[in-house]
Amino acid sequence: MSESSADCVIVGSGIGGAVLALILGRAGKHVVILEREEKPIPQPRPEIHAQATLDLYRKLGVADRILREAALPLQGLRLRRRGGPVLIEFNASDFKRFEVQPYSTDPARVRAILVEEAKAAGSVEVRHGVNVREIVYHGMRAQGVRALEDKNLVTWRAPLIVGDDGGKSLIRRSMAIPIQIRDFPIDFLSQAGSPAGAG
Image (cartoon, rainbow, N blue to C red; front, top):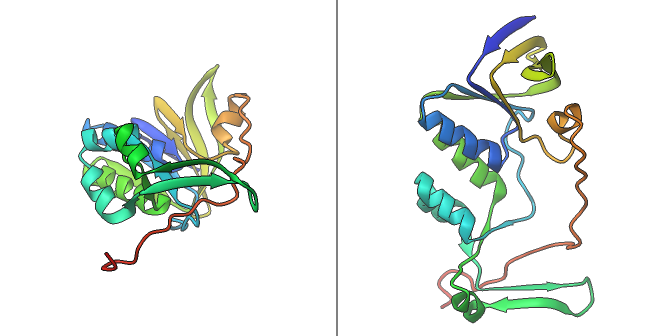
């Protein structure tokens, strides 16, 4: 078994973990992201980013890249029950009235951009194919994680341990945080628009 250390260990590279890595990395902190997947998994469903998220991306200087590489502006939004009536509908004039412009984004690409920008800070590293097994405690305080990496058991120690490891989070379970994530009652969300050049 080997030991390594960092200022912050982030389990999983979701949007929250990637944004935190970017902020801490730019502040000169040594951040290690432990990601279970060997490479990013394509997400079949888009995510909708609202104005507050885009405002944060602008503050971080990554909004232009995300909008250029991973987003399409929504011209409208219609939610309906499968085979049933429309439950709610917004169009471009509604967005204008509310002074918002939501975007449909490719979640895998957004995460990849955030992680790339974090790594560019120079003090953030991402380790893929790492299976975090347990939290390491000193008394009641979490001080690291134990993970299987390249068939070796590695202990990562850090004063800050963050879990961004999904709905079945090892971090939340180990800290007895009672969060249950239920499926959102929308079967599929998609965007329709004119093909490029169709006017």
